[in-house]
Length: 299
Image 1: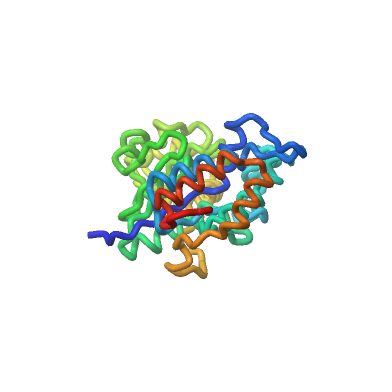
Image 2 (image 1 turned 60 degrees about the horizontal axis):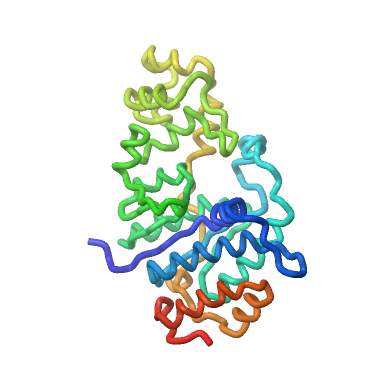
């Protein structure tokens, strides 16, 4: 049996990008861009209203490149540089989350996915229910952890092991092997030439995982060997290492660090008015008055 404790983990960087591209380019009267801030806060406040959480972490990517770029210099090189009008909105979002009392997490040189994976493993092993809000399919591998769920923030759909099996034809723990074989265009990972989704599933049904392929490279079945004739052992290992999430990052964080704190009400109001977000201010006030964030009143 799981304890009553639930930890909600948010892929903050992904949320910001989705908000930026989902809304028109809003600006204050002085010309400061606010579209991403507005969209992000609307989504996040909606979540707070619905779930009334106690333990949350909004996790962000580090601006500094990590180990994956060292493994493969073209990793994510297909992505456009972050737009200037989006870049300047990231800091205010983090400031507002802090003023709201929402825990955030970012580590130099570490991707948000690896931080989320580490927290998911750590707290699920303690018997917590861990709910991850992300639209990224590479996170599905974390569903192999007991007590972990994934919610697509764009659709509200909950992803579980059965849905992964139905969609991909494989188990969640096989997702890294699947992505290593077929590649991942989003992150510019080539995968194995000539191996598409159906063929990847066929390979994995026969040998189980890329780890098994690498371990038995010289004595693979002929059918599998033929599928892999256009790749090397070294490249396949590289693709696998790129898509496999880290779940053992040393994160100096305790249970209490993830608990929603009391908001800094005066500064929060000042910041939202500075950004000309009266409607967001009204939503925040309603949240606290309703008791959703365990406060009787905000102003």
